[in-house]
Length: 232
Ligand code: CTP
Ligand code: MG
Image 1 (cartoon, helix red, strand yellow):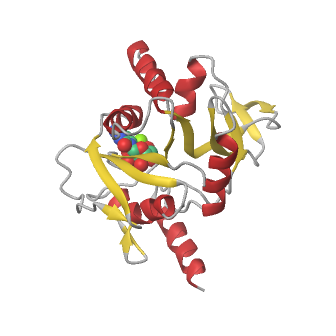
Image 2 (cartoon, rainbow, N blue to C red):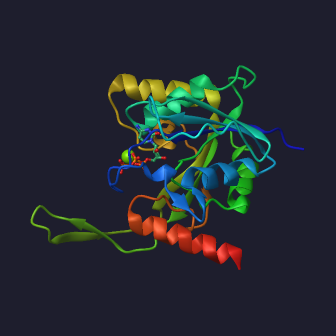
């Protein structure tokens, strides 16, 4: 069997675009919090060893899960940005996770990850020296706007992809890349971007559009719809 990997789950966001007092990762969907759906999707996979969840300081909403799907769920304190939370999680992983081992990073707010996509990312990504990310090809026609809101031109979309998570990198390389971006004052919006800054070329692995991120209340309704479809 393939060696198992750990997953870092940044879950220290406030969900400002979603709104409301309870951060979106703790909102219920189909009877349990979004974050439990996310952790189950990850930990049910035989290739995943355990999860390190980066939560906000003094997080009163974390219910104290320590095991899901029979695998360890650990926590650490996240940071002021997604990148800072991922870095904290990588540093807090157990010592048994060697520096050159692959680790996954997956947003707490992406509960609808399919087992097949996770499996393909692990299988294909581990054959790449750098690592890989799940991504979806851009389907819409893209317009470049001018200052006046008019269209300057149409951008070719042939080689454009939307970055999803999970993303798979070697523990130490991603730590170094995130530290370097932070030191340079560059806000990286995903983990691959930190690696790219250092000249690495992570592999794109096509994943399903259904692995969307919950950003607004409409996204939570979409997830509830996906859950109800699973049930039948
Ligand atoms: N995240 C984090 N630490 C932060 C900011 C974000 O761990 N300081 C996590 C979020 O909890 C989420 C993931 O990064 O799982 C993706 O971020 P996003 O969807 O932007 O969530 P929020 O930052 O919570 O939402 P918003 O930007 O609307 O405030
Ligand atoms: Mg955010």
